[in-house]
Structure formats: C-alpha cells, structure tokens
Image (tube, rainbow over all chains, first blue to last red; front, side, top):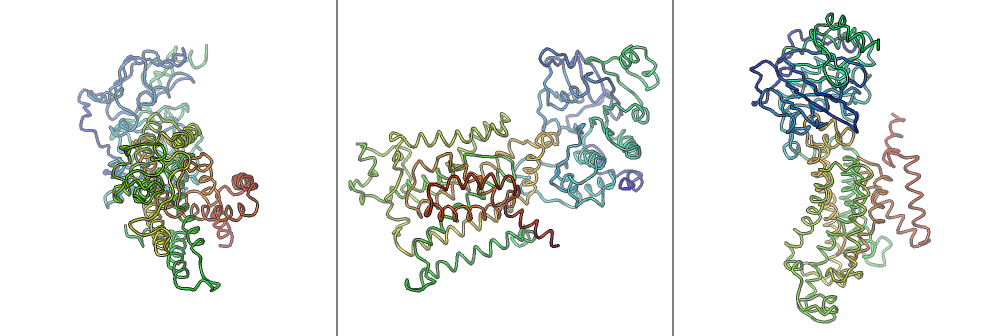
Length: 274
Length: 363
C-alpha cells in the first residue's frame, strides 16, 4: 500500500514545507481570507454565477457542494484568474484584489488549485513535479540557473512523505496510479506553500481506502491553510466537513453544518428535483 | 554545472561529440595533408558539403529545442536561419569593396545596377566583422522576440501558431524578393571574395570555416543540453505537456516560451551565418516555407526531444537529398513527403526512438 505513509510517519507534519508562506500583503486580521462579493459570470447568456457572495475564514476547511451546473468550477476559475467576472469583487485577504492579477500572480500570492482531472507533468518524475511547484523565484533567468539547496531538498522529501510517495520519487509521474496522481497534485499544491487551497473533486475515481487517506490528508492541512473542497461524494464531505456551502444556479443556497444542510428543505428540493 | 556532469547521463551526446571531434580533426587533415591522388583524400567539395550538413545540424538543434522540448511547432525557423545568413552575406558583400564588376568602392554591384547612389542606412556598419557578427545573433533574436511576444502573450498555440510562423517566413521571402528592399532581390547576395581578409577559395579558409562550424555545433549542443537539463528546461517541458497547469503553479508561461524561442532563433541565425560563407550565396529562396517544413522533417526523422536525434536526422536527410537530387531530382520531394508520413506513422520517436527501443528489448 503506497499510501501507508500518509500521516503516519509525520504525525506533526513537516512544519517547514506545509506551512503556508503568506504574501506580505495578505491581511486576514478581520477573519476571512477570501472575500467574494456579488460575483456574476455570464457565458453566452448563461448565468454561471449569479451575484455570488461567499467568505472563507483563515484556516477553515470548507466544502462546497451543489448539483451540476451550480457554478462550482466557475467560482474556482474566478478565484484563480482563469475567468473574469462581469461584475463583483474578489479579494484575497483585505488588500489583494484578485481581479487585477493573472493566474501566475495569483498562484504566487498564495492560492493553489488542484484540478478535477489529475493534471501532473507526466513526462517528469515525481520529484521533478514537486521541484517545479516549489515556492521560489519563478522568473526565467533565475529558473535557468536554479539549483536545489539543502532546505529545499528537505522540503521536497517532507512532502514526498506527507503524500506517501517517497519510493516513487524517481518514477515518471505518468506511470502513477490515478490515486497517486491525485496525491502528487496535492503535494504540488503544498510545495507552493499556499495560504488557500482550492481542491476540485479530490476523490473522484478513488477507491474507498484511497478516499479515506485523502480525507486524512486534507484534514491535516486545515488550520495551517484554508482549504476549499468541491466534491460530489456526500460521504466524503460528511467525513471532513465542518461547514458546508450549497451552491445552486450560481449563488449560495445555504450554509451550515452537514446535518443542517441535509435537512434543509430547499437543498432536498434542489438535489431531488422535488 | 561542469560539462562532464552535464554529459554524464547523456550517452547519445557523448557519442555525438566524440564523432564531431573526430570529424573536425580528421576530415580537414585528410584534405590538407594527403595528395589529391590518394584514395583517402577529401576534396574541397566534400569538405564544404559536410560543413553545410553541420550547419543544418545546428539549425535542427534549434528546431528540436522549440518543438521537441517546448512543443512549439515553428514552421518558420528557416527565416531565422536566412536572416543570420543575410547578415553575414552583407558583411562579405561590403568586404568585396571595389573588386566588384562595377568597381564601386562603397556600393555592392546590385545597387550600382539599380542606379542607387548611396548605401541604405541599414547597410551601415556591416563593413565591420564584429558588427555583422552581432547582427547575426541580434536580428533573428529580435524578430523572434517581437513575434513571440505578440503570439505567446495572446496565447496563440498549436496549429494557429504554426500557420503564422509559416506566414512569417513567406512574407519575408516576398519582401526579400523585391529589389527595392536593398538585399539584392531574387539574386540575393553572392560573388563573395573573402572573409576576415582570407580568400574564400583558399584551402586554409575552407578548413577554417569547417572547423569553426564543427566547434560552434559542439558548443551549441552543450549549451542546449545545459538548457534542457536546467530547471528552465523542465518548465518548458511542463508547458509543452500541461500549459495551464504550469500557469497555475506560478510560472509566466509566455516568458518561458519566449525565452526558448528567442534562444532557438539565435542558434538558427548562427547556423545561417556559418552556412553562407561555405556555400557562397544567400538568396530569398532560403525563406521559402518549404525549407522550414524540411527542418521539421529532419527532427522528426532523427527523433524529437533528444538533441542528438535532431543532428542525426539533419545529416541523414540531407545526405539522402544530395544523393537523390543527383540521381532522380524530380522524385526528391515525393520521397521527402513519404519519409515524413512513414516516420509519423511508424516511428513516432524517430530513429533514436527505434535505437533505444532495440536497446531496451535486449536489456
């Protein structure tokens, strides 16, 4: 079992690598790390997001659920700079305006994203995947002459342990199993030392055991990071969520604990179409 | 990173560099030291022909860098080669001085023929070698920078990028065909006499050019190997395989593409500058879209993303071309097309892929 290392060898977690390194401008003194206010996105007349307002607290683990087309992925696209909203504001902390930044700038400010489909660099080794994701100077010339120092090697080793892939470090990422690729991608997120992690359907296609380990991994990250998980698997959401947000037709339908949400009449209607 | 460290894991590169040193030392020796009657004598023609292949090999390296590693299928790299060639040609044109047919000390013959009375401003400075040498690198590099900046910033990729690179070289060809451009129109630049004061016809000069080409090819190979072994090289491969993912981990993808594209264009320009003194002519035909397509075939035949594969492909295809066009000139283009189709279908990793596959099976 390749995932055996998850959380077992590093109970306290490798503090150096896992702790987020905040952009000095990141100001979370008022509580929330992410402010989305009144965001609307329209694609060819289709309203993907409709005056969405959502706050994520610093250190929180938040699950976002909702039927297909509720706007979950579009919301992630807006936060990471892939899609520009027609209106509304998006702030990371109180000062950093996400709508003024492009994807690399947002990534460097401290927002990491894991895609729905595992997307690792298949031709590169596991180690090299982590090396590329590492938080460091990412301009061209410094990258050309970049050499790993001892601390950086240690960071990569720590993350390899955390995601349970130390034996696979030399292996081509393309040859990993589906679950291992998902973990590698989470590992790449950790290497960026983000303050906010956006995780899109982390357990899709995973076996039961792999799902459990992923839940442990995500739970261990909360606190040090803010984690936003979009997921369809209700059992998985129940196992990790403290607070759940339900999206429907591009805006927030309700928020609360999993139990509260599941008993909410409107949520039942949306999901069952009753 | 030392050179030995760089080549430690590059067996193909060690073989290539060893062969290159042998070729660079023995062929000129056989040419200079053996009498013409000896069966082992290398004629000046053969030496220059092989020198030409080495220039093509350098050009193929440049293409492999952007296409094989960066996934940017440039169908216009011939343009950078031609621009480097023109820059060197302009220098040698001005070196002719008053030895031209019209005996004008300042103006090249074709300008006298067009009744021009003064040298266009963009010909100024080319009488100095260092200036011309700088332009050999700077002109292709700047064009690649401007073109790449516009294209990559607008996120033009894939087949669209290939088409506009093809359009770029075609547009340059049409422009250089025009007499008013001041580059000799369809005749191009020729009748060169000497380089750095040495006659181009002299044996010693030919040998010098040959050795210089081999040296440049070797150094360029090592530089390319350094680039692809660096972290920047890995980012470029990452961009090739998952561009948006690379952006989301914080790399400005367009700058990395631009970096590799400009570096590659500079190498292509250098190849052109070494080519022109050896073949003695540069004309707008070098900008022809067909030339740029051929480069891609060399790299595909040899094997992408290996560097030495590109060298092998360039030399093999051009040797075949020499043989074919002597025997059955009209068949060559069909043979080339067929080669490309066959390689694409049956040898997706080129000849090098075939070799390493064989080795893998034996192991």
